[in-house]
Each structure stands twice: as structure tokens, then as C-alpha cells.
Image 1 (cartoon, helix red, strand yellow):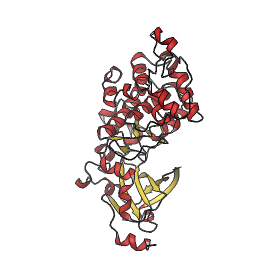
Image 2 (cartoon, one colour):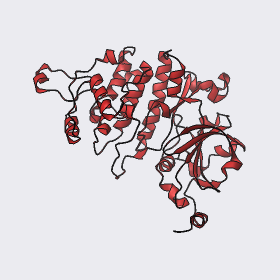
Image 3 (cartoon, one colour):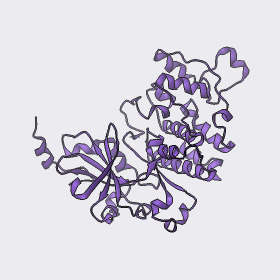
Image 4 (cartoon, helix red, strand yellow):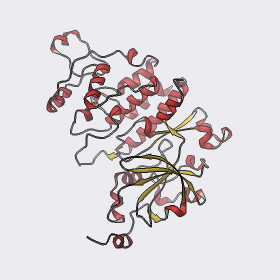
Length: 369
């Protein structure tokens, strides 16, 4: 076996990755989470924050290039994600999916700003330093104890989340894990330090919304086989549940629709206990994707539309999809107006081809108003 320590010292780190001490630069305050990729900790910066906000031109076009909006956030707290697995050499970290995404997609006001990527000079773990927000959308909904969002706040949250997804798709990536826990939230006045510091273009936003966690993001042209175990189950699209060999940005649109319904109803739309239960809940809500021959003459189409391929995929898995007429739009989203209902239900179509693009949604009447 090669001398790993020697290979580290003889190796050069990939572009945008530096090597320095975690302990000397950051003071850990608390744990924020633990996942398959690694841990996330809240930390305090031990050096002037301006060092993280230098707009070095070689970082232009990446998520490491600081936006002016991020410079207005004067907090000296950051979130640091640490990769559990150690790789054989420094250069191998350039192949990590999250690093590729950060290096390929430009910063955006509705994506969590990345400040630096570094490898600790002692234990050689990879760390990603990013801005810290108060809580995630799941926590915010739970803390409100049933008090729904105003129509203006609801539109603001959904618009900001959509802008994040649209930006990712525009740069030929899809996120693959859009869910409330990955949608970070902070009151606007907290982000900018005070009400007086809030810029004019943010005055109608009670909350700043930022989509985070890019560990599952992948480029649309990646040739490797797609895995079915992406995204959290409740937000997993039918084509993933039915193991379609290829999928695309439509999986993010489906997840966006499921999240939007949850923000409206304050309850998850498809809380399946397992993947089979998930499919049953989707069918009970949206109706069956195939219409039996004896009903074909009724000219009836379920709210989730038709997708004949579902039967083929299900058969290949040894399943027979049950028949159900499903619910009406009003039953699914009793508190949503017509324009909002159209946005959400257009996302929750069985057929990936029938779902709108993020750009289509941004041009809808609901958001144009």
C-alpha cells in the first residue's frame, strides 16, 4: 500500500481547494446535522470575514464567487460541511460530485453561498464552508403551529425556490434532492442585520430562501447509470420510484410541486412509509396513470394525467398498479387560488414530459403577478 501521508504532501490540491488548519481558522459551536456524506457544524470565524469575500476573478462562474448580497450579511457564523470519507490523494477530491457542482455553477441569491473549500492539513478531511441560515423550511413550518403563510409570503417563498431550481437547470444540472430540509430560511431583517439594512429589492420578502446541499446534484449529460435511490422518498418522482433507467430535470419539478403543496397545506402530500406505499399514495391522490378500457369512453382524465409507460415499468418490477380515480384539485389544495393550483398541479403530472420547465413556471400567471 502506498504511503498515504507522503502522497498527500507530494500532491497538489485541485483548483479552488486550499489546504490549511480547521482549528486555527474556525471555532466549532454546535452540530447542525449528520448525513451519509458527512457532518455539518456551526462555527465562528476566527479571522476577518473579508478574507472569505474577496471577489477573486479565478472564482468567477463558480459558487465560490461572492455575491454583493452575501457581502451584506455581516454574521461571522458559518456552516461547515465535512466529508466523512478520506480519499487517497488531494487531487481525487476534484472528482467529488458536490465539488464539481460548486465549481461549475455560478453563485445565485437563492443558493447557499459557498465561501471556501479546504482540506485540513492534519487529518486531510475535505471541508466546505458556507453561509449559515437560521433554520430550514421544515423547521419553519413546524414552528408556526398551523399558522399559514400570507399569500404574499407564500408567493415569495415559492418564487425564490423556483429561481434557485431554474438557475441550476439553466447551467445543465439537476439538484435531485429538493425537500424542505434542504431549503434554508432566515428572516430578511436577520440576514441583513436590521430592517433598515434590507435593500429595496428585498422589501417584499419576509424570508430569504436558499436551496442547499448539492451532494446529489449531477450534470444532465453524465453518462453513468442513474441511481433510483436519490431524493428523499416523499419527494421522489414516479419515474424514480418505478426505476426508469433515465430521468432528467423533471424530477426537480415534481419535487418542487410536492414541496409547494406542503407549504400550502402545512402537511406532506405523499408521506409514504416505503416506495410501494408512496406509489399507492400518489395514485390515491392524483389518480391512476393508466385508464382501464371500460372507462376509456368516459373521456375522463385524472388530475395527474396519463402515463402509459407506468404500467410497463411497474410490470418489470413485478407490480400491478391499482386503479383509483384520485382526488380533485380542490380536494388536494383546498386553500390555493386557481393560478397557484395550476402551478402546483402542472408539476405533479405522472408523465415527466407533461411537466413544465422551471422557465415555464416562472412565466406563469401566478408568478408574473
